[in-house]
View 1 (cartoon, helix red, strand yellow):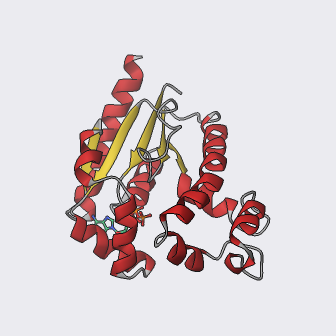
View 2 (tube, protein in one colour):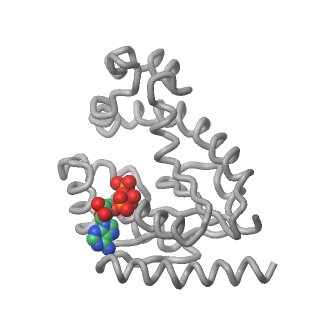
View 3 (cartoon, protein in one colour):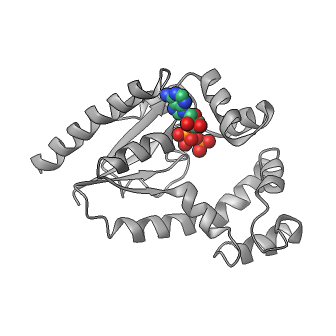
Amino acid sequence: MSLIIGLTGGIGSGKSTVAKFFAGLGADVVDTDSIAHELTQPQGAAIPAIRKIFTGKFITAEGALNRKEMRALVFSDDGLRRKLEAILHPLIRIEVARRAASFSAPYGIIVVPLLFETGGYREMIGRVLVVDCDEQVQIARAMARTGLDEQTARAIMATQLSRRERLRRADDVIANDADMPHLRQQVDVLHKKYLTLVNKD
Ligand code: ATP
């Protein structure tokens, strides 16, 4: 494996959709959101620390993280959000590195919503791919997919890097303001580009 791409973008920008397209083209993909879910399932590695710091109110009867309760709390309180991130992010990074070590496709994709905001990924990745879209579209898609209200979607966006800054730090950008075929087409172009880059090494 000579090329690992860090895929990022704001909430609802289309990261998971793009990652799925790349996986369909044969790329190895690891998604930090899925790892976060696994870590916070019953018996997940993050549960004991969450229980200790946040009290049982945030743990469901089954022993998983109560995501709804926690989301409402952490996105209205920066200090608590940082505490939760301090539990989750190191565990996620370790798991990403473990999975990336067994990547075997020509190139791999690591989906990290907070790629720039969280340290520790730059040394793993060769390029940054940003999925970009208009903020109003982002909010509408995030609300439709997750059932979040607009205020929460905006609060989450406020914790993320600005669109402009994200674009400034990108090696490659996918513009996702149009329809799915348009998105797919851009992924196909990048797939070819990544294969070319890998073959040059
Ligand atoms: P989140 O940050 O919330 O995890 P995400 O960046 O992974 O979101 P997706 O889940 O891929 O974004 O997309 C958000 C929603 O928007 C999904 O329901 C997806 O099907 C839809 N969507 C993404 N791109 C397009 C598009 N070009 N046209 C129409 N719908 C789209």
